[in-house]
Length: 60
Image 1: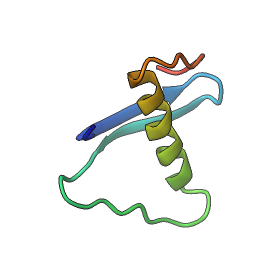
Image 2: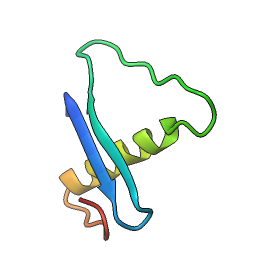
Image 3: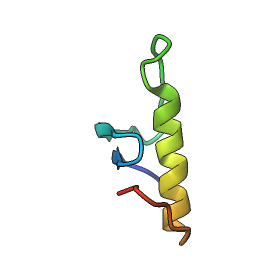
């Protein structure tokens, strides 16, 4: 699975990731503590689970 764009909203945590466009070859998440790097990775993991047929409540 290759992700080109990502937009995410989690109702449970009331957290929204605005549209993020990813490059083809390399992407680097950089930021201070609390900037949202881990949340982006968790969003991708959740979307992968949904794509594989695992239901997750509160996730669009």
